[in-house]
Length: 244
Image 1 (cartoon, rainbow, N blue to C red):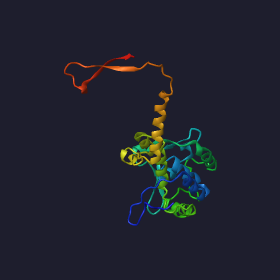
Image 2: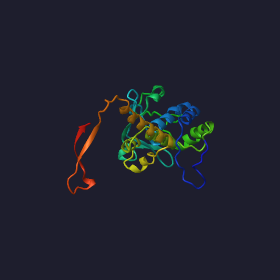
Image 3: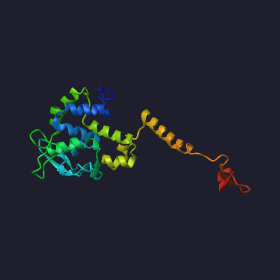
Image 4: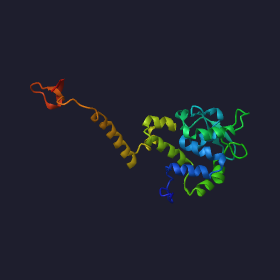
């Protein structure tokens, strides 16, 4: 996929991937990070939120994730866990059942003998560092998948776009994204040609239903309007309905 929206001197803009491209990345990356790609997309989680996940944060049967912290990297090395970016960042995020089996299998490989164990770690079992992950795992994967120029944050953007296209309203998007402001969520409430066609077809289906019901011949309803002397048409009021 050519990177047409990122150019020299421009601030990188998020790209929405296709489902095929998401799975191409998941297939291309090291197996230990496959589920990281899927959750980044289908749960719309931030990198720092994913890096801080513990097995106890995942209810695999209910297909939900509890987000109440993030990984904060320190300059010069080391990291610590802190609260999410905002109060709205503390949230419960459902994920689709289609990735449940893969996430369950991943969790079964995570050692469960320590309370501080993480769902995703470096090959050495330490908390992930974004720069190391990017250089050693992400860049080789996007190159292998033919998606050079794609950033990890594009997975979250893709998930948000999918959620909006599925019909989420502004409040639902804000809750899922962990935002208290409407500004970021409004980015996703755009309409593509395909979405507009789907909406038009849905309206057609709703309108078609009553037309398919049998009607009694000669039976029509008309609304009777009461017009007082000197009443303007803007103030007409109905007084009843009669059959004719």
